[in-house]
Image 1: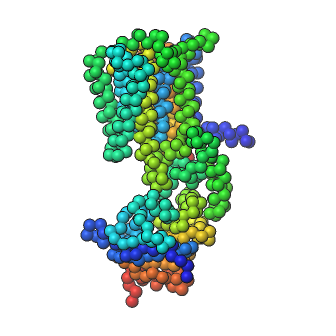
Image 2 (image 1 turned 120 degrees about the horizontal axis):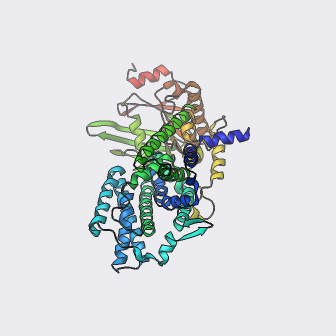
Amino acid sequence: MESNRTILRLIGRPEAGPFALLVLLIVVFTSINPNFISILNISNTLAFTVELGLIALAMTLLMTSGEFDLSVGSVFGFSAVLMWTLFNSGVASLEVAFVAALGTAALIGLSSGLLVTQLKIPSFLVTLGMLLLVRGTALFITDGFPQRTWNAAGEPLAEILVGDFWIGPLRIYMSLFWFALAAIVLGYVLTGTKAGNWIQASGGNPDAARARGVKVNRTKIYLFMLSSTFAALAGIISSIRTSAANPNSGTGYELEVIAMVVIGGTALMGGRGTIIGTVIGVFILRLMRNGIIMIGVPGLAYNIFIGAIILGMMALHSWLDRRHQEAT
Amino acid sequence: MAEDLIRMVAIKKSYGKVHALRGVDFTVRRGEIVGLLGDNGAGKSTLIKVLSGAVAATSGDIYVDGEKAIIRNTTDAINYSIETIYQDSALVTQLSIARNLFLGREPLRGPRFFNRLDQPMMDQVASDLLKEVGITKDIPTTTPIGSLSGGERQAVAIARAMHFDSDLIILDEPTNNLGVAETQGVLQFVRNARDSGHSCIFIAHNIHHVFQVVDRIVVLRRGTVAANDIDPKKTSIEEVERIITGMEH
């Protein structure tokens, strides 16, 4: 009886649908190609997953507060380019260049946040403008050419960010550790803290929140800075791992990240967000990309599946919401 | 006579050439429920908006506890212990009952750095408050507001005002769109709030609801006070209706 109720409560959670889909994907892919759960494949998938995943975690909080950021893909490319340009030209050590790149990203987020909250321009338009501005700057300062990154080897910062180690036969990148840490910290912030309460209230009913003394604008500005900084961190990690800082990298990531977040159950219009759901959403999209290639579906068909998953998940969430309201 | 909690003097409000309030004097005494009545456009909601900080008066003064009060926005009003409850807008539907009650004034526990909500304390206080306000049904305090009925939402908003010791609770159409049983519930919540020492302003279109709960009725008509001291026990509903429409004689 009691365990029945626990099961019912688990099924009612917004993460239940995405979790079931994740399990289904793993079962289907593995039954078609057993190599899908081979050590090598898991290791490869994890390495790339966490870079987009970091952005998705920060974006979850931003979207819960009722805003979103289309400029994260640009910031992803720009920050790595900025860091390596500073370092390669001898202006700064790698550590200083790293801090400068993160600081610049935070300023980009601050600008977006101020424009959205002070001038009341929708975040779609502000961050679309920022997307072009930042991408344009990255292309302009590099003349469109990738920056050299191969002298990262041996730098302690590179080891901390993307160094790898082996757990038995499983190769683990440090970035996975940073992703897990960020998920735990941001999950705690969203569900267990006063800040999290303000984030949810800012997205759910900003007028009511303001009337209670919640600093809605400040909350949103901080979250814009957070998502931009996380995008920069992800871009830098990616540039070290792949030994390439390309001014074009990260193109289209903003939509993939937003897809990860909404598939996990966070509401596009704010008020409700889940870090656990986002982690599941991140894995669904990455496994999908990896899995359909492993089972022999042409990679070009990837978007068909992703689109179908997004639509299916949205239909599921909307159905659950409606059922929830009718039950009262 | 009980002392005056709120005194609004010669309040005028114009929107361009439209005079919504033409010099209104309005008082609320400690521990009383005042019914504010008037036809559409009589100025009720403008008067309430001035008092709750949603709009600024063109001229006139407000005194709280005899001291002159400057109310420029809703935060000022809350600082003067004036709480306005609009039917839908006061709560965040996605958040739980407990979290709505403490929104903006969250209790923390543990080291400050962790910013950790004192959830057990919030849940305990919330469940006590729901009983105090008169909810008899057993509702978990973790229930999101979105799953509550209209009357229960009113109860949560009233409970919040009671807990944070708002001296004045303004209820704007609290019984709109509610069923009979729910309405009776809300009226009882309002009585309970008064009995624990809070003053209330009660605005409703339905005069019957107003008569059931208020101690005194004030009628506005075309931006002025048409009647200031109607005792619902000594006056008939028909008489009040005539005052509202301006067809007294």
